[in-house]
Length: 121
Image (cartoon, rainbow, N blue to C red; front, side):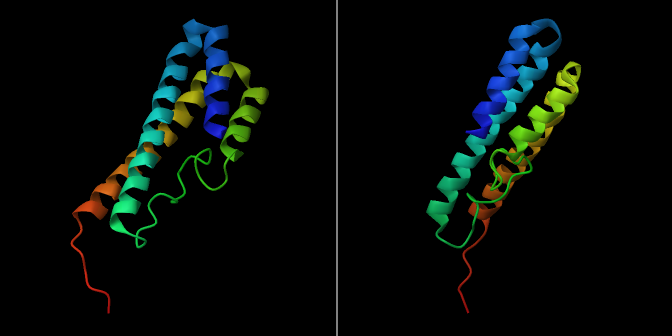
């Protein structure tokens, strides 16, 4: 839900001023898609690997997808209320955080899949 709010807000800013906000909104949308795919991979790995790794419920760097759902969207919205002209900067920074969290989740999923099974003691 929070990711939809962020995407909607970015879309509104891109619609209002596509020259200055279009690229930042596109980067944020791509990062949100990447994070959604990383969460799906994490969920699939968690089902496949069993209850041991808590990969699907790991908190993201971006709070919009983590346990504090909505907090990232609220902070992003408040930042835009205070500094609406700073949308390209704020959206680009948020896109970077989202993408870093998604790539970290994908790297961890790869590690979990490559790790040999160890017997429990």
